[in-house]
Image 1 (spheres, one colour):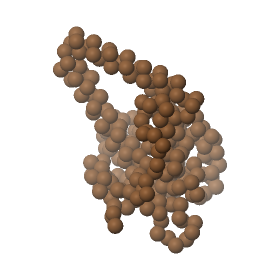
Image 2 (cartoon, rainbow, N blue to C red):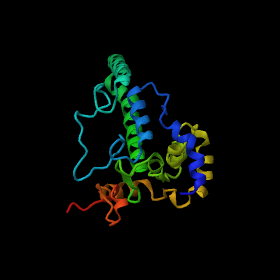
Image 3 (cartoon, rainbow, N blue to C red):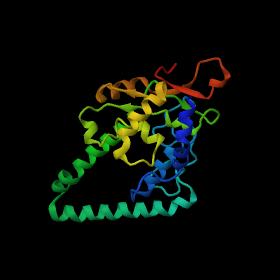
Image 4 (tube, one colour):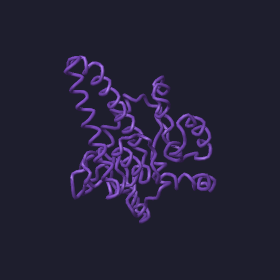
Length: 241
């Protein structure tokens, strides 16, 4: 790894442990912050963590709406209660709106767009962290920089602009998570020559990539290399033998 990369990321590494979202949805805020602090870790990441044959045990069902779930620590639980109260308040507001405007109107104006936005959000984040060339690490091999580089930029064509380029600047977003999104394209252009082979990008059309990754990235398995240093590195597999 070039020393220039280490030097330019020293500050970003510290920032990655702070909240990366101003969203009032505290549940997502805390889980997303934990994701940025532990990207690529099979033991501590919380976003699209791939399955292993042995699995990853939780002592309780993991849910964004459960203040006592394993995703959160004690100091975050009050904010999860606040988030749940907000969800209930919005749900009640939608119920009253449906009573005034009709259920069909609410589904068309609110329900339909909500489903579309969430479908794209899930697909985008899934493809940013799922690719045959992306490694994952257990605690013996993981560090923040390795995890931040275990992401991939995707090309959504004209939709890149529609999504404010969150699709094709995700590597830069993980390296500099406090950077405003309107600098992401500039930063991506700057880091490509510095990262060289460590920069991951795939221009496969997203609908083809979704199908390919769903077939090929079924679970992760330790590196087959006999080198003992590689035992904590996991790669995607699709054969269940």
